[in-house]
Image 1 (spheres, one colour):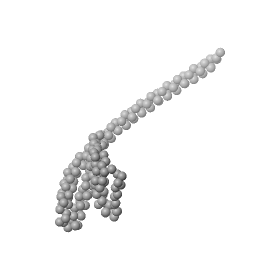
Image 2 (cartoon, rainbow, N blue to C red):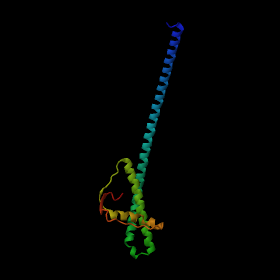
Image 3 (cartoon, rainbow, N blue to C red):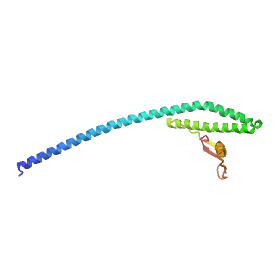
Image 4 (cartoon, rainbow, N blue to C red):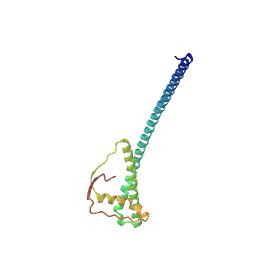
Length: 173
């Protein structure tokens, strides 16, 4: 049989064990509560960031629309001037071409900002239709030709005869 002191020691150890378990459970519960509160704080912060980002995108889209109107006027008027460029001093005609090309490039940047805002808001649309590949690529080359010339880079294009004449794409993008 067990002596009284052994029983007493066992009871004491059992009590210490229960106290330790209770203390650990309390610490776990406190830590779980702290983590749950921290998670809620993070969720609120994430929601605020998402709302702020949406407001910024909306601001960029509005600003881009405001820029687009006068830019369309600049591009349109410079295009009209280019129609009569044969009668013009070559230096003036070149300057107007530069204005027109730069306007087109800036318009593309504004369109990209609007596209990004649409993409973020989920209202982005792609207009896929049959497109003449050579015309599209020639347009891209034309849009960068001024920059290429300014940097004294020679730009050559070659269209492989194996490429299809028409492809399904959104030619604006």
